Length: 387
Image 1 (cartoon, helix red, strand yellow):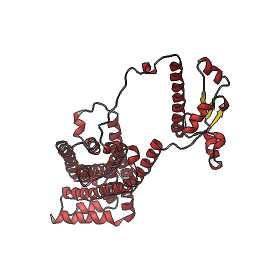
Image 2 (cartoon, helix red, strand yellow):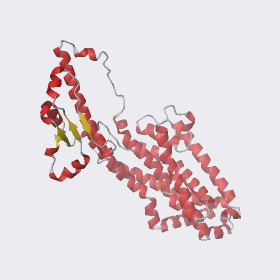
Image 3 (cartoon, rainbow, N blue to C red):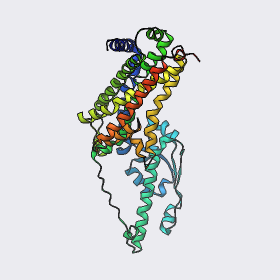
């Protein structure tokens, strides 16, 4: 036990000695709340607010009622654009062409072609175009209803079935965008926070000949690996906890009531998330140590291990596109934690059996990696990076 304490103390000193590397390790914990705050504000602004849209309209005088409906929805003529925004809307160049025969065709009950011209490949145009097209469709629908009424046709005939939607979701589940982002960032923090420590304590120590000197001491390779694992995992856990605390603080500045949602991280939720993510922190560090020791150099270890951080990003995204998820996904590392966090953020009861099951599977894989790595460290090929 004294040997393990000494090894662990050595790993902690190495981890906390380089303040710059530690700041990089905590970068995810700092950036995640900022990104969630910014994206949440942007999302709410797009859903709730209707900023002015300036359109170049040809033939506006032929459809004054349509132009008035545009104006009521803050869709204005290009002539009204403020001078400071003129260049922006000139580049966006949204054009609507209304034919001269608009009034004549309207009286005759004929179909009127209104041309909407712009660059549809520009993603910034999606929201303005959606609003413009919705208003044109609403205007056309209202004219159609009036034509039927004039002819003595009850417009209710067009809607034989009325669908009444009743949302049973809790207010907390309406903020699923924030929950999804937080779950993703927590998994990323578990993998990224201890990354630099894991690489430095494996491939880094091997290049500095520290590992060779350490293995010459009367201490088992299993204790060496465990000390390195606990050192890297501790930094990963700190990153996860810091992400949770800062996110809870930053989301408090977002007015989610505008979209009928609430989001808060109470003590129970934070505790459940930490219980879920602690095994992932150990699993991520064990995997990073295992891969780092297989690399031939420190630079190769950096490039190889960096690919591992794609796992917490790819797996949750892939799960979103699977409708009928196999049950075994609930047991696997990353996927199991991701699904459980999704239920937790929705306000559903925590399935503690699944929590225990996926945690045990994650811990079992971690133990297997540690044992295999401790055996491989007895080989000169691994210690000296021989081919």
